[in-house]
Length: 235
Image 1 (spheres, helix red, strand yellow):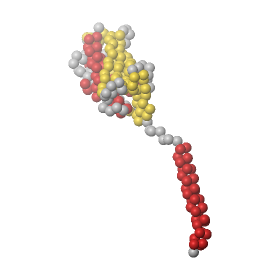
Image 2 (cartoon, rainbow, N blue to C red):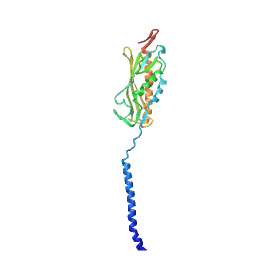
Image 3 (tube, rainbow, N blue to C red):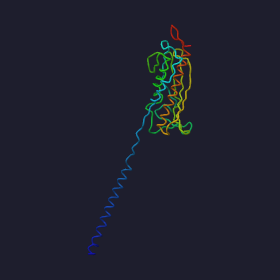
């Protein structure tokens, strides 16, 4: 009996070792293939400034000139300072150093997103017979030129904040004379320390600046433009 068992055992052990070796080789091949498979990049997320449109309803009506004889305002396409003229969402961890979120972007450049928001906000002020966005063949009495100086998510303290700065010029379309200019800035705390929190705060900051810009246009039209039975004349 013992001789029979002993004669079989040398055959069992090599078979078991072969099975274990084959399993180990298969596992190694699977791991190797996994290492060669490229990592799947996160899908980019896109955001807008659509929530900033609420500023239009806050524009004051007081002091606006009569609609029938009011000037027509041409709104030029906003410009943007270097570093803020792309769809990248800018954040700052050190002063004067701009960085961009890797997988989060605006749906368009801040300047192009801002143009229709400016028109909407000023229209609600009632100071102009019409507010027309360029490009357009319409003739206007006054022109609004704007420049985005910064729109950035600042991680310079807790909580982080978004800063939006806009420069505006109101120009007489006939004489090319600057009637008034002003720089607007708003800062809003971010509800979370990430790109989405920055987007939410950006909408709040832009809404605040649009509110101030609409007031500025109403006041300038009221103080720089008079009307008579023969037509409107700049002061």
